Image (tube, rainbow, N blue to C red; front, top):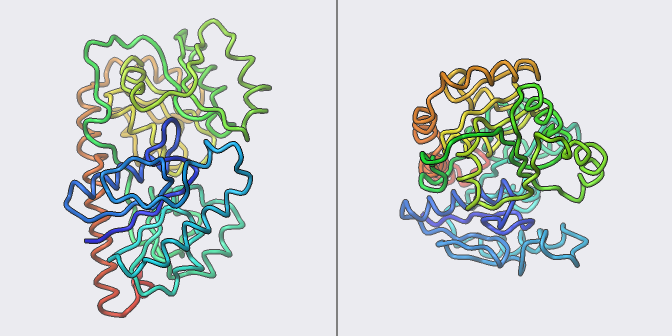
Length: 354
């Protein structure tokens, strides 16, 4: 099958450091190549892939200090795809709603995986205008604000089996917070949970420009506490040791997280997760098996006293059976086949409905 994967341009594919969507696009692209498909990746020119790379911009936008209008490169990207769309069996977009005006009448099968939150009121009119665009959600919880959209499937993210693995020689000795410093991720609560539990906390996180004020005023003063170590932003190679060395990953989110890639990164290392009951958490974490789902800080502190009953090898087995990149790719191929059948039967994939 000739497949086009169209990624955002904010980060390289895969990202050099933090980056959720582009990282998932990389895992999916490589898994599709491994399955024998002819894949072309439309992404920034500094991306690395075994697929055919079509650079839509020279480098990731986050790494370009001269960039002030990030919409313009994405317009270029969409036009590049439009001009060669006929060369593919299916187009797979990871650009939220941006492709819809360009491709909603396309005769080339396409779909859009939505990676962000959908509970924003300004989004509803967009999906009313394009009710037949084929969509994939990354969790069932993500699609709740838009129940009438044309959802074809929910496909959870996956990681390559060998990317992150348990390190048996590592003795877990701290709690971990991994991801991004922002109000909805609540690193302040992670610091509080660790303090109440009497355990050290390592914070490995990115600080976006948009969140710099929050970091400076709310989080930075807390980093001076004796039980907290701020590691900063780490890359993929560092995650294996960081997560394997943690007694548990803390995930005290305060928003409807659409998926949470860090959750399965921890599971891949056999590390249990203590997560607040928000968004996709109940779809990813199996309470009492791969971690604990709690409602608040006291619940998280209590859950930390029950880590010994969890088996790290079992946690890893659950990751392998549910969240591998190969399984994710196979599920997407099933959707691609449905789109191709619809295009053959009706002449347009917009006729395929959930």
